[in-house]
Each structure stands twice: as C-alpha cells, then as structure tokens.
Amino acid sequence: RNLALGILFDRPSVSRAEISRITGLTRTTISGIVSELIRAGLVHEVGLGKSRGGKSPILLSLIPDSRSVIGLDLAYDNFSGAVVDLRGNIHHRAETPVRGRDGDAALASVYELLDELVPAARQPLVGIGVETLQWFAVVLMASAALSLFVALTSALQERRYDLALLRGDPSDGLPGVP
Image (cartoon, rainbow, N blue to C red; front, side):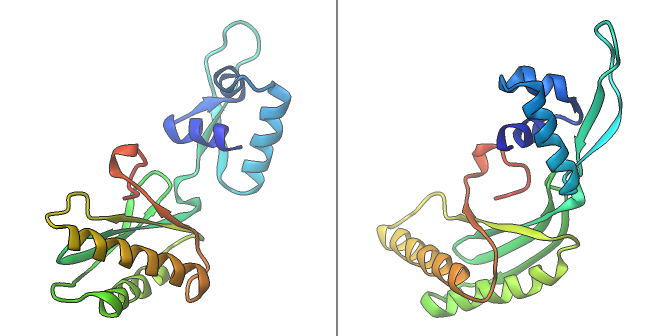
C-alpha cells in the first residue's frame, strides 16, 4: 500500500500496470491495493492513458484534498504552522512569536497554534509534521529544542489531539510537510 501511495504522490497520474512494473508487485495485488485506496477516498480514476497495444490503461490520481496534514516549524523566535492537503497546497497558515518562552510556555505556544490549525482542516487530519531548528548556535539551544520535541511528542500522543506525529526534514522531499 505504501509503495503504491508513494508512486501516486510522485506522479500526477499513473496506471495500475505502471505501478505494478515500478513496484514489482503483481497486477492482482496492485488492483486490490488500488481498490482499497479508492474506497478510502484517497485515489480516483481520471481517464484513459495511451495504449501500448491493446486496451488503454485507466489512469489513477491521488485526490489531494481527501486528507489534511498539519506542518509545524518550531524556529527559535517564531512558531508557525500550516494545514496542507496531500499535494502540499496550503489551506491555512498561523504563527505565534515565542521569543523568551521556553519549557511549558513554549509548549503552550504550540498548543495555541494547533488549536487554531486543527479546526481549519477541511478534511480528516492524518498527522502533524514537526520541523525543529536545523542549525544550533549553542548546545543549550539544541538541548532546549530536543526537550520541547520530546514534551510535544508525549503530549500529542497522550492527550489533546488524536493524531500521528511525524518529525521531518524538508530535504526529504515531502511536499508541503515540514
């Protein structure tokens, strides 16, 4: 399922046969996975592709606005976030200054941000991506950022929001999810 979804994320449209060729999975397996994704409302058929001799393949495409994701950027002096669809299109942005806040006060800022972003989601939320500081000027800042991430992870998993928490690096190529 994840292999097929990855291919659908990477292309505007693709046939079942092409997914089968790329993944090495049988066409029967891919048809089952695609049927499941269609029933889940993540994928739809968008037309016919070019034939390589024989029947024209039915093209599939990800439905970008079928789910929402929240991306957070927890920078040194400003926390920002956005609600994005599965193609990374931003539907709502929010930010809050955090200069001088640390520990519980910084975590409270994250909650304020999420309290604005969660209701702004147009579709079911599938998770929260969190980007923390990339370059630390001092070891203390690194320690504080790590402590905040651990506290946020625990808090989000244990209470308040029933969502997955993903820590990402913008260089990993996930569109619109920090």
